[in-house]
Image (cartoon, rainbow, N blue to C red; front, side, top):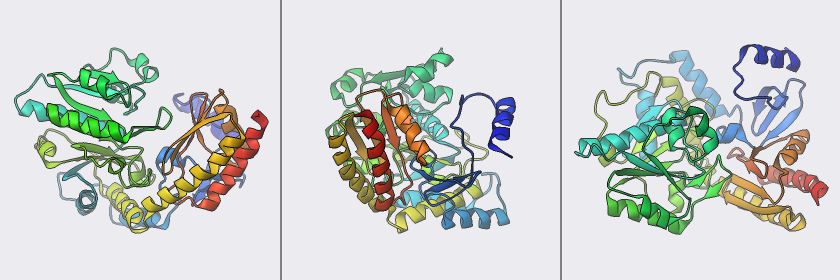
Amino acid sequence: MTLQEIIQKDRKYYMNTFGDRVPVCFSHGKGISLWDLDGNEYYDFLAGIAVSALGHSHPAVVNAICDQAKKFIHCSSLYYIESQAKLAELIVKNSCADKVFFANSGAEANEGAIKLARLYFKKKGYPNKIEIITLEKSFHGRTLATIAATGQDKYQKPYCPLTPKFLKVPINDLKALEQAICENTCAVMLEPIQGESGVNPTTYEYMKGVRRLCDENEILLIFDEVQCGLGRTGKLFGYQHYGIEPDIFTLAKALGGGFPIGALCAKEHAAKAFEPGDHGSTFGGNPLACSTAYAVLSTIINDKLCEHAEETGNYFFNKIESVKIKHPVISEVRGRGLMIGIQFGKPIAKEVNKKCFDNKYLLGTVGDSILRLLPPLITTKADMDGLVEVLDNILSEFD
């Protein structure tokens, strides 16, 4: 099929939730590169929005999928599943979690975290302790509960009335959080680095204070690590930058390297609130997803891709700083590792992104003034040099 034929078929048969997409269709990929139907090579600095951690068609992922698919793809969790048990063990042995439950997406994992937090206090004899505090500008998913948890009006307005008992406070404002906690609060839920709203990191002092407030008020702390987890920030988990541990955290995106899977991870005291029948999933934890995720996570750990992401990210921050000095239209560059936001002082992000696309570089935008980079963890310094050169040339047009 030609690109135009695909576009016509899409517009005729697919629900229009994405509007006018970028006019390209990719046929295959390798490493950080994607090729379109005409054989043009593009450099993928978005990685499916932080999904393709190992790049495209990584041998470990391809082999895991093929090997498991040849055996069998699915069976119910009514039966024991070897790859499910092995993946749970791998996560537990490399994190602060004691138990894991597998879902199919980040939204499902976050939904599970919300359920677990409320059930935890209900079973302790506090049925009214159901309120969850989240942060303004946060993003936790597109189910009804996770939209209610999300701190962005644009996602919520179409679906009012929202699921109740979610309260929002500003990021990095410890006093606001302290004032928001009440006798009915069961948990604080936040992203260590907000991704969807433009790469907004929490501060070290704030996170220490959040953990302290949760401890003092005997409430649960939930970290949504769907985007910032699994090596993205230069450590395997975002919480490791702050010297604290959550009671519950969630994973998805990079976990399957492109194959759908999410994980709800919890310490024992929280995890034991779930008893048989309290939670479940038909497809969650299936053999194919878990075999794939085991290969992805093992590769991230064994190939030291967390350290690589930190080193490559630091290299980019140093290189882009000279570009920022040269082109003052860049007002700020923020993030950690390979989770990067470039803030412009003018609403030029979409135009810059279009010009990057014309130069065969795939990036993302947040609103009109933020350029977002989420490249595969295998991205090299040479790859970064290419992007920096392109950005330098493009931004010369805006001086």
